[in-house]
Image 1 (cartoon, helix red, strand yellow):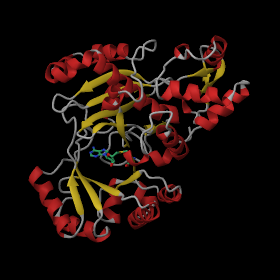
Image 2: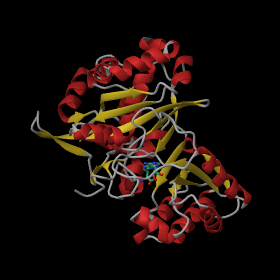
Image 3: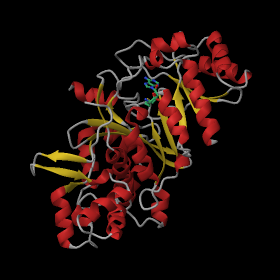
Image 4: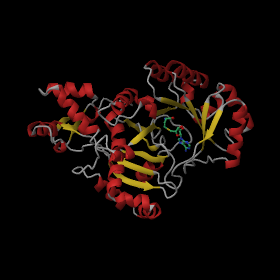
Length: 412
Ligand code: SAH
């Protein structure tokens, strides 16, 4: 199956017909579709709001549409509602890792993190991945398919429903008793997923009004596309997703609050630069030289490290948005003094690099350096004029590394 697939329609085995993927239509596409049904364009605005602001999960909830239209839509279109099948909650920091089942039974992971600035969600862009990075669990079984715009958005929307319903009922509980709840969640992940699943009951979304204090306090404000998959390998759907995510009639998340991370598909980085969006772009670098990078990341066989860094510079210069580099520190592989020196000459003064102690995956022997060694590496980079931060790892006590939760489920 190609990495980017047109999922604007899908075959429904229940109804034995082709169904419209209404959750993946941006406002223009939705207008076209409603027009084809003989409806006025304002209906598209109403439906868009129902789907992406009120987070409706069923056409029957769209009470300002005629019954006839609701029925027509139910018969020929479907809403993408990822179903949570497992939720793990970190005892340490409340980070939640979700495993969602998609309509075709594929599984994808997403993560919810609470920062001082608010809620941030990390989403997957593909089912599996074909980039084959040596240290990553996501790519071990290859790529199944790219996610639809509705499935990327759907992960955020499902989590947003969960956060909103949390604040109304069970989660005052979470806030007051994080430890108890984490224990409970850890002991009974399946029960809890069901419990969470029930709270996202299709018939009862409990979403506050968009301008209410409760909405503003609990809305997801930041999104990172750093879960499973290579977003630039699902480029067309990624662009639709960005349009929909930032639409003022939807979740209305600012482009500046969206980070897309890529392993370095050079032509796509340049194409994206030309779009002059305001999103933050991050390059997974992970090595200071072409030779070392090729050992860790097969994508380097196609695009040389200097081309990848050059494309990032081009993105920064064209969009005026500062780019970032990600660097997983692997003990004895890329964390020596020489590595720090080579890394500094590869990048430019003032470049920003995020150091991430590698998350061990059980299929590989890679280990993270000690905290002291990581700080030492950071200092060396700073001495050369590179801004380096050590990423605070969230949810270390749950299936933290990219793709681990999904793999565990697939192995069952
Ligand atoms: N394909 C994209 C986004 C997905 S991976 C990319 O390559 O950027 C998100 C980030 O997690 C990438 O920087 C990736 O290299 C990193 N990563 C994957 N497995 C990891 C592990 N076991 N430890 C630390 N970082 C890891």
